Image (cartoon, rainbow, N blue to C red; front, side, top):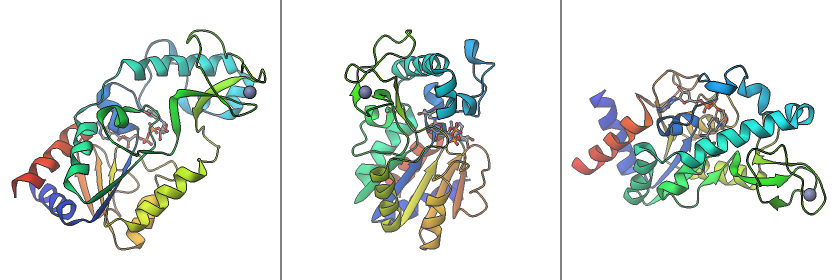
Length: 245
Ligand code: NAD
Ligand code: ZN
């Protein structure tokens, strides 16, 4: 493990442009469950894959809205963890860093990361499902509030399963991965696009792909280096090694 960490630290130190792709695992140590972890309490009998879809919202808007209200509260109570903070530190140690996240919790920004590319939107924003205008979220416990402009149903400004990603964000992510020497992939299962295709793009260009995850993923076999462990444990160690040699 020490050898792998050293190799990763060396690659990061030598890089001109580091791209970072983060997933739900990066926020797990902040107490925000990933979709594949069991849900607790009231929501234990629902599967997130059945709630985070346009079809579910069309059928049961009040259920989907309430689930997001619950997640929004979790996010607001959560604090960035050592992994989020280490990525702020990494940006200071390399000439250029582009942070791409699939997370909707805004914790990278709260930790101090700048110009974060949000591929899946942000749970703290609310948008009208009819006219697309941003709106106030309103009272968290009420069923879906209505758009003050057109009367349409309001929804969280996140990308649901089956929906396209925001084009500008996706293009920026692809451009970053196409110019980076190193792509650091943290806490994503690699099952949801484009978490799967961005690392492939980097590998095809000959860039190094470093994966940080406590378990093996579909990316692990192809990755240049696999650092087995949590974001909050591995990322600070990487920074320490970058500084020590
Ligand atoms: P995912 O596909 O990104 O998988 C989570 C990955 O994180 C798994 O591979 C798991 O092994 C890994 N992991 C768990 N704990 C970790 C830790 N401490 N450090 C590093 N890695 C760890 O995410 P998902 O849960 O399948 O969610 C799919 C999508 O749903 C996300 O991309 C996102 O858009 C949304 N979502 C967002 C949040 C958030 O914003 N915090 C949370 C859950 C889901
Ligand atoms: Zn509207």
